[in-house]
Length: 490
Image 1: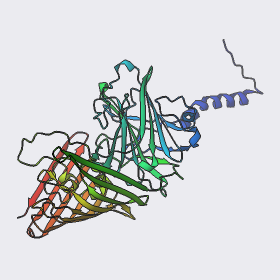
Image 2: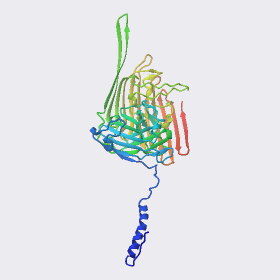
Image 3: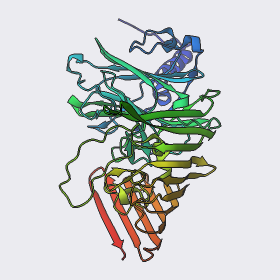
Image 4: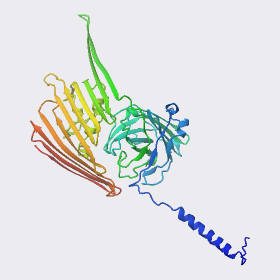
């Protein structure tokens, strides 16, 4: 039993002590207040990269026991997007990040309380990972909040790399040099990425990059992200990424890359005892004029260096769509993007589609030479292309050209113009000019509002041709809608 006796002399002091003790919990409660729910509309996390010496760099083997990883910046600040937006994930994800003068290193410990149920079936390059346990890294080294680079893997170490265009389209045809290793462990799985700075375009003067991590657990239909905690924003949306700072003094190489190819055929004439040998050399040359602007040359180009097209069956009246796979045309392909969602589902009417160059009515046509400048020039995203194709029997050689410029306006939108000249088939003498406006707003309407407008006018033999279209959509947490207007003149 505890007893406190107050004497006249010490009563005042004891009473003061009691009042102080009674006030202490209230004071502590006042100091440690719950900050309340996070406003994910304005929320974005930050990470400062840690630099290590090249000699300390980790071995990319799916094992985080290298001492270098203990020095790396790390975070576990992931939130659910599915099934419950903003909720604490059911499994912990720990991300590590560091760099040396040549590579950006990203490591993940993806904890899983049921590792025997991890889904990992695919190993092919650029495999669809939507039904696999997977982790994705997205980088925006130019702070565009629209375009970037995508790298992903699963527990098998499958490599998926792609270009992100305008936070809405992804081009898996793009491939670059990088390394990743993964493996399943007793408490989940591990993934290690090594991304060379020379494999991505980097703005050395930029203090902050856009950065996003995304994990998916298919058996739980659970998607968790580091930033962009908003289900109305797509998985490749870079309008509100996390921020990465501290990457400086890195080596991006000499900026010169040359690709040389030789195709050939031989035939032996038994009567004349002669061998007829036909060799066709070709080349692609890329040079970084600035870290964000690339000059490209191509000579005697054909499809020999391109991956085979996926087989498709045409059940409609329109031509099938085959994506561009040639390196010369894939370089900075986002610089020529026009119209946004207006041309998202079809290329009919699209003023510039590089796949039409070098192939006419299903048969290949040689590209004698081509030159291109593309990338970022000041505030503008620019692309200019000139190509000379060879003749093929009745088809004469053609001069073809395209130029595109776009500018970021407002917070998430852009406006631009395009000019094209020539007809790959040589049937008409034609030029096309157009303007487009791509509006995005993901902060005002409790969802994502998108409005894409495009107008095109032709000149030359088809001077009466005119095209105007608008594609407007809204995607919210409870409902969504899409509307489209299109006018095609004669």
